[in-house]
Length: 478
Ligand code: ZN
Ligand code: CU
Image 1 (tube, rainbow, N blue to C red):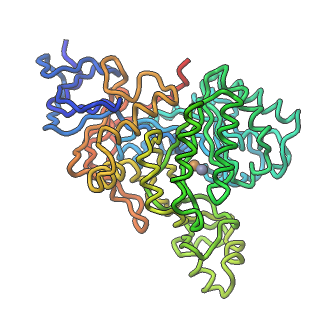
Image 2 (tube, rainbow, N blue to C red):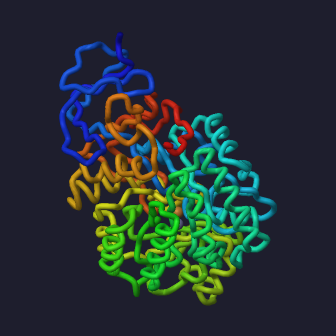
Image 3 (cartoon, helix red, strand yellow):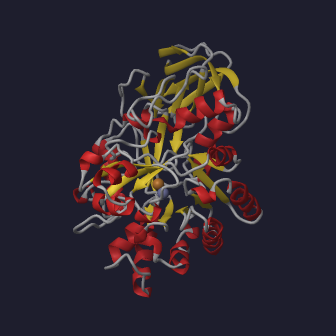
C-alpha cells in the first residue's frame, strides 16, 4: 500500500537531542509510518528534501493564543514558524474555565474581550477548539488569576479558605478534563496579593493528576531570587515539576544576574524538577504596568484604549508631547500595552543556552503592533542564535523546541520524529531559515520554513498561505 507522503533525502533531527542522520520519512494517515535510509514503496506525494532538515513540529510552550486559535483558526503567525502545537493558559490567565461578568481584568484582557470568554470548563474549551479546527494543536494550562476572578469579588486581596476550596474544586475538574497544570502570574496586581500558601493549596491538586506548575514569577526585578525561591517551594510542596515562565532578569539594576539565578536553578535541580521557558529577544511585552515605568530603557506603547493614536511611540515621546511626566502619561493611556527594552543580551543568551530551557514565544496575538516574537521566536533561535551566533548546535535548538517540551508537558507521542508518532513535522533549510518580523514591521512570516505538517495534513508550504487545518485539542498524557 502506498504511503500518503514521503519526505526523501532529509536530514532528520529527531527532537531527542541526539545526532542528525540522513533518511527517508514516510507518513500514512496521521502518523509517521516508516523511517529508513531508503524507502522504495511509493507515496501519493513525494517531497525531495535535498538534504534539508526534517524535525518534529515545534511546540510553543508559552502562548496567549487561547481565544485566537478559535477566532482565527488558520493561525499563520505560528504555523509559518514551524509551530504545530501551542500551549495556552500561561501567566495565570486562561480562557478555559474563565467566567467573566463585566469588565475583563488586567492581564486577562490580553486574551480578548468579554464576549470571547465563553468556555466555563476545559471540555467546553476543547469542543470549541475541535469545532474551529485550528491549524495547530492546542493544550491548556489553568490560570490562577482566572480561578481567582471566578471565585473572588476582589483580586486585590488573598483568597479566603472557602474561595481556595472553590478554586481547588474547579482546578481538579479541569485537570480531570485534560488540562496540563496550573499557571500563575504573581507579578500582576490581579494575583500579587495571593499568598504563597494560597498557591501551595492549589498546587496540592496537581501531583495526583501529574500536572505541572508554571509561573510568571512574583518579581523578575531585584527580588528575583526570593521569587524563584517561592516558586521552587511551591513545587516542592505540591511535589510537582516547576516551569519558570519567560525567565529573565528585568530592569537595568538587575542586568547580568542570570549568573546567579541559573546557579540557583542548578542547586534546586539537585532535589526537584525545574525548568524554564524563554524567547530570543532582549525586550519584553505585556500590558502597561505603571510600576515598571522608568527612564533607564525605552518603553514603546503597543496599544492604548484611551489613546489608540499614540501606539508605536515611546512613552517618553508621548509624555514630552503632552508636557507631563511618564507616569502621568502612562495613567492617561491605560488600559494599554507596552514593549519594554528591559533585558541584557548576555542574560538572554545565558538563559537560551541553559540545558533546562525550552523555547516559548509569549507572543501577544491581539496587539495591533505586536512584539515580533509572535511571528519570529522559533526561526530567530534557529537562524540568528544557532546558525549565525553559534550559541548551540542545531540538535540542541530543536530539542528545546520539541522533545524536551513534549516530555515536560506530557504530550503523548509528539515532539519526536519516531515511527508511530503523530506526523507533526517541519521541513526547513538550515542555511536560510531566519526571522523576518521586526519591532517596526512585526507581522511577517519567517524565511526558510518550507513545509509544515500537522497530524499528517500538509498545512503550510512556505508561501505565506495555510493549506490545511488539522489541529486538535491535546490532553495531558495520563
Ligand atoms: Zn508572563
Ligand atoms: Cu506570558
